[in-house]
Amino acid sequence: MSILMDSCNVMRGSKSGLETHIREKKAGHLLDVDGDICHHIHNAAKAFCKPFDWFLEQLLNDLFNDMKWSPDLREMYQEMCEILGIKYSIPQRFFSHRWLSVYDVTVDTNRLFDASTVFYFPMLMKEEHRQHLPTVVEIYKRLNVSEASKERIREIHKELGQKKFTKEGRERKDRIVTQIFTQRKQTKMVMGLYCSVFPLLKHFVLLLEMKEPLIHQLHESQLKLFKDFLGCYVKAEVINTASTGAQLKKLDLKQAIMKPKQMFMGSKALKLIQSPSTPTYMVKEAYIACGDTLQKKLALSNKFLKTVSALHPHASGHTLTLSLLQKLPELAPNVLTETEEELYELNIRKYQTDQHPDFPEGSRIDEWWGKEEICLKYLCLSKMAKAVLSCFHGPQVESSFNVMNDVIDAKSGRLNIETYQAIQNIKYGLKASGKSAVEYFKKRDHLHDKVYHTLVRNVKRSFSQYKAILEEKKSVATEKTETAGH
Image (tube, rainbow, N blue to C red; front, side, top):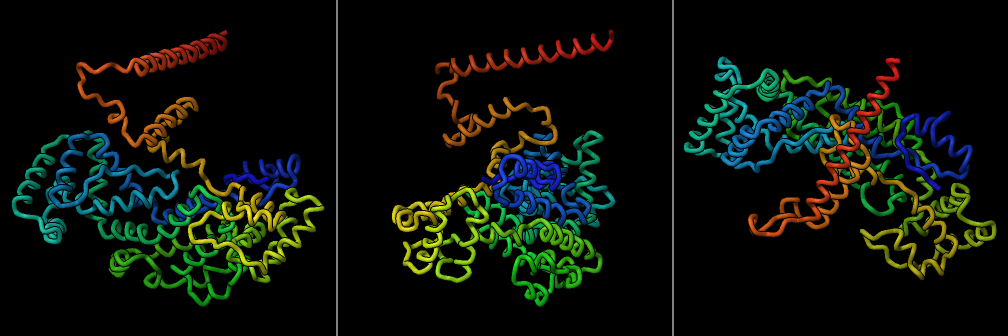
């Protein structure tokens, strides 16, 4: 039995955590597969962002909110993108709680950055126009904007200059133009850094979101990720002194850090960081914070994960593989009976010297161990392999939040389970049909085609149920008030 949990104290605390209670009172044979590794990666990414004081995240939120509340601004922004030859998309929403959302949104914002620069130019103070005009002119030249297109852009700028904004809207636009123009170098540096560094972490998260057993790859994948990340800012001779996960855990990383200009940050950020006016200390702090989080949280020396890696068909035929497979019954004591353990010992020795069916790249390991010829030849080893490979290791429960898109956010704290489930079911149904809601219910003739009576009844019933819930809540609140008054 295995349970995958977040690594908070409530779940995995050594004294009163849920895992501790289950292990002590219900299931002493509970396997140790560590916490949710994808949450560790997300927390490491947040640690990387923290030294920049959420500088870029503020811009991402402002760009999204500025377009969200203004349909007319969206139309003008779309036209601006078309004029400049940039594929238009609405600025994405940044979610601090969604895995590496900052990377996805930054990539899209970076793609649209030229369009945003030209679009927000008229929102500068008049005295700042001359100072920042060369930035817009450089974009025109690089994108080969024609004179006719420039004339249309000037018309759009005039419309934007005449628009009236709320106090909140004006303050938001002031923040945007400050980051796009006044702090342009720092903004582009941080964007370039995120776009270059975070793919290392993103690739790992995507690997674990696959719907197939990958627990046998967790140990090696974590080692590779950690070494690759350390290679971005730690001297190679220090990394090479550690060959095992346990040794990597003990490395003193702060004593072997490269100079900022030697660190990996992508070509765009590297060019900007060579400028005297661009701060470099934040890059160093970001790498140290992220590296420390990975070193502390990743299960680099987890015995069970290391042992499970021996189940990969390509690992057979090595002495280390035999040693690791011998430990499996110890770590998973509830799979085999005493009689089967002896046969298991014979199985693993035979497995080491036999010829096996091919295991092509991209094959599923559970299907390979489930083949009839494998099951019959290595009865007990196959039983152990299938049991261990069934361990939950990936955060697929989180994928439901991705399907929900922006339904779950900071402003939706009162969304109840029934509503969430209903919305999720509808989204899954539409996704399965390959159609949008408009396409699904589209009519050829709006005046004469039949009305969807079932849909109308369901809408009415839903409203009635919602109204009843509100009335019930209101009566409960009234009763509490009256009771408190007495």
